[in-house]
Amino acid sequence: MSETAAMSDYAEMTLNELRLALASEIANAAIFDGWSDTALVHAAEIAGADIDVVRLAFPGGAMDMIEAWIDTIDVAMREALPAEKLAKMKIRERIRALVQFRLDAVEGQEEAVRRALAVMAQPQNAATALRIGWRSADNMWRLAGDNATDYNHYTKRAILAGIYSATLAVFIDDESEDKQATRDFLDRRIEGVMKFERAKAKFLNSDRESFSVTRFLGRLRYPSR
View 1 (cartoon, rainbow, N blue to C red):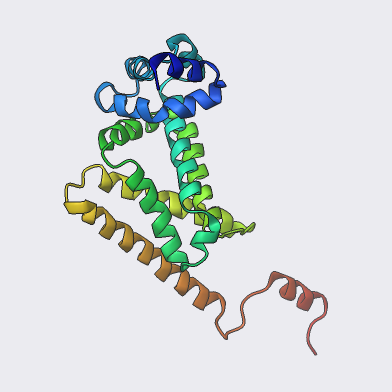
View 2 (spheres, one colour):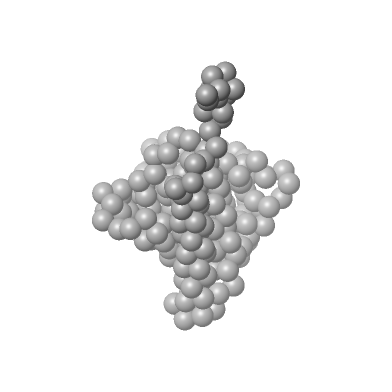
């Protein structure tokens, strides 16, 4: 594709399409320049896009760039691992495959991940970072087939977000062959959660009578004779 044709394509994109189209290139630039305007300009120049229009696509600066990058990973994950494909796996295998896909998607961009985590950890970005992390965890659970609407909906997503963030912290410094240390860490974390879930299920489904508020109140009103 000629440079003129590329510029024409970008010129015809909506701002949302533009932010997704340039997100990965910005991440590559962020390895050296951080999530900065310098990285944004560099990515726009490589793509042949109008820098003034590109800036309009990222009005929130660094956090907008990082969120767009994460959005592209979410899109790629849904395309590569649709629910019908994951349905053939056990639940732990589904979660592992989804997290591992996200890690593989950013391999070679570890410094961009490190810098992104530093930006997201800043107090002024905490709420946005939490929202982004929650959304990614929700995307993974929905693909894994979870449609819970009770308190489990929230606990599952909180736990998975914690597993993913902890695994990312290992991933960015992992120099083992094929990131084996990260894979082992992820397996241990998932196994730990599965053991907890099995223990919880055993407790909740035990033969002993569990406490029921409704039954208790009923007995207060109509005591046994």
